[in-house]
Length: 342
Image 1 (cartoon, rainbow, N blue to C red):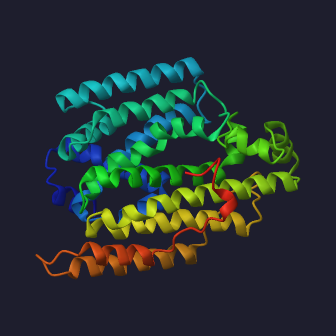
Image 2 (spheres, rainbow, N blue to C red; image 1 turned 180 degrees about the horizontal axis):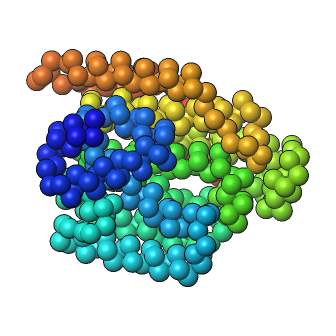
């Protein structure tokens, strides 16, 4: 299947093929939900998505690999080295590092703005300096580089039926929604790393602070204040998903099944968290395999429909909007709006 993807993408250089294959392995190993959704993309576009994921994963591992003995100074130096390597590769189009080589090739093929990669690395550096955020505005500033730009990097690969700038706010919102979902699911693991990605003003509104969370993590005991705060964080996240929904109809028809599948699967993580009683400090919530399989099958059906549409008869904007309305949009209760709304 890898050769088929590379052939379809017109990637013939042996070194580049090996670089893209390496990125694909990273995606398959670490980004299970994302990798599943990627399989619904047109074959020719998949290598680019693997390259984008591979680069993000490499930078994230420099910062967060808990098995590494590297000091913060050493991790910062590694990020500096990666950025210098990236800038040189974006200028010259070549690199001895497989992940960077694949990324530079993807950026050139799809004319992806270099600043999106620079902004991403800026946020990665913040993880070495900042362990919590006072309010949602500060967290959103961080997430611009760590999540929103991922959606903006993806957009040229996915294609749009509207001017790209019209779709960009929704693509950015989807990246933020995915990351907020991860923050909520991984809050216990992040505490173990010394980090807290839930905004301080949201915690304070429910009488929660870091020490209470650490006590709950250590003892396994629950607290109604923590549960109420986590519910509010989930509602906040659902609100961001809702802002992202209109962007699904703005994508090229062949890309919609992939992104819709990712949208639904990530939203299902929030459902799994709720079904588990918001016990994220004690265990990781997991979407049941049956649910994942059902969503994947739905994506395959939508993909088949997109492929059988007569050539030269593109889907109308009204039809695309109707399909998007059929997508189960996350529900947001009124109290989730306001201070922490998207």
